[in-house]
Amino acid sequence: APYNFCKSCTDNKQYIGVWGTGSSIDLGVKAAGWTAFTQKWLDLSNDNFRLVEIETFIENGQRQFLGIFKRGTGGHYLWNVAGWDNFTAKWNALHQSGLRLVDMATYVDGTTRHYVGVFRAGSDQQALWNTTGWDNFTTKWAQLSNQGFRLVDLETHAVGGQRQYIGVFRQGTYGHPLWCVTGWANFS
Image 1 (cartoon, rainbow, N blue to C red):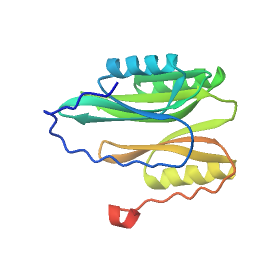
Image 2: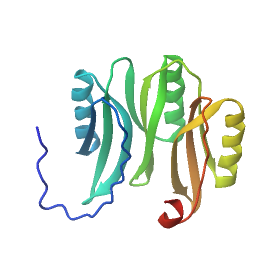
Image 3: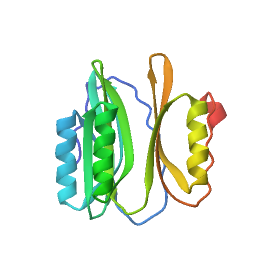
């Protein structure tokens, strides 16, 4: 069913999408609050859709979760937890059970940083790296690249006035440049 149009919504958010040709069904779901989003996740999971990407932001004073779902089956998991140590403990446990982190997001609620992970079944190796500073991140990126890993997701946020980088890496052999510039005109 179509979603209701929100006449009272006043935030002007910029949405950027990347499309490709294909015959699969992709669904975009936006829900206000974690409870509403996880209910949509459960409904779509029961209809053989799997979450492959998640984003979060504040709109009209309320936390929004935006997810991209694709048709699929197999093991999957969605995890939201406060604290990096709690997140990596779950990442390790899920890795041991055959699930791989495919996308993540991070946000602050009050003074607490949350980490959200989207997991899918997989058997390849992966690495998760969290560091302060671009130079530290690119050093680890080069090291992992030489070991046969490819960056599949990158999150960044400020911690105490310094830029923090989180990288999700999976096994791969394809080309994979990493680039950082300031300003949309330089990027595009």
